Image 1 (tube, rainbow, N blue to C red):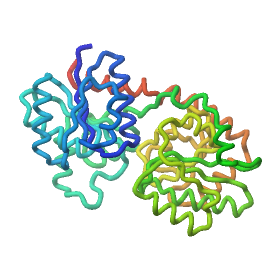
Image 2: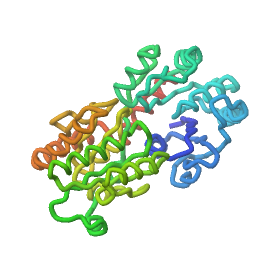
Image 3: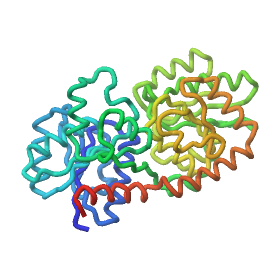
Image 4: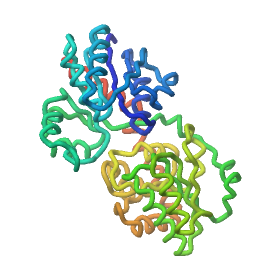
Length: 370
């Protein structure tokens, strides 16, 4: 297929969106699509570029969304390679893509993938510019969940300019793990329940709610431990919180993990305490690994976790509610196993990287009138 797409990602760190971008580029290549990548100089994306399957990659200063010099360089790349679509994967990339379009002779289509369920007019935004940005500065949007689609509609984006394409994961990355060595390493005793989470330590992930829920679970007489895999700016705060609550012996910070197959096999229960969440690919990973899930009812999570069918849903921002879900899961292992089996079937049908790439490709072709 003779199709070239330029992807822009302005994030300095490697999080779920960057993992999705990497999977998308690889799956598109297998469908004959040429991907050119533009990222931020010195970013985690640049560090991992050798593992990606982009034909070319350019790393620019990307000093904010009004970086005219970077936009001019992007426009030059577009013109030299006759690229018909700029696909932006972050909010700042959205504006940069539009500026590059204005500066380009080729006038490429601008496609924006939105992954967060925050109100587009959140506090601190300049509302007149935000209105223009979402109404006129993109040709089309991809929402990764129905919830995000609703956010875009509420923000004034016309319905015909939004396509729903769920995020997806590589099932082989998480299936068939062995958690026995980790049980030995962390001295997990017989009768202890291993609660786990894999995510970036950001405000909206609300790890403090999971920590508070753990305390309630233990006070109710259940021997549970919590293992948090990830990194981020809130880690020192969370460590101090654990220490202040006297939970040092039962909460373990695992750091960042590249390979998570054995980690998911180590967890008895995957716990998500987010207060906002676009979709949560970590839950999809848990589904494919066969790990039961207890999660909060926020953002796109209810599109994955159907309460009592594919996992348990509990009220966001309510550690007591989350604790009740965890206790039910501990006391009803057979029911949780059945939910995990249904969750895996759901993931295989709707949430693979292949399906995600096919959905993106369909949007590309539609944008170009093919």
